[in-house]
Image (cartoon, rainbow, N blue to C red; front, top):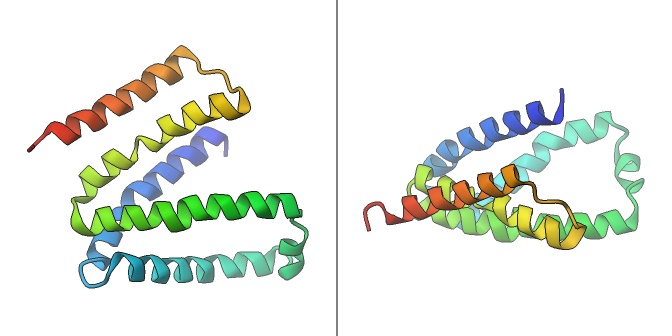
Length: 142
């Protein structure tokens, strides 16, 4: 599979997941849901780690990579997911996910600043359309 296929598969999975999350969060707090989902995700990934060589596979990861993985885990699996679960618990899945979809635009700007990634016109225009869509979603019903 090429990167575009993986990205589309990820988008499909992330588009389906909030429907299950919303139903699960009807009966639990956002924090409890996040903890349970994180525990379950670890259990689902564990067989793959064992298949790939067990603990030695993880021990081969360099310390620098562990540090960056820790930061990424904090921003996605702790802070970001807790904010997302809180929004999902109290909001509508479609609206919440449309608003969350501004994250690629944030990545676009930060990648340009940190990695000197070139922002092409199509990337900029796409990001601006995402922001416009989020703005329009925020206006509806207000």
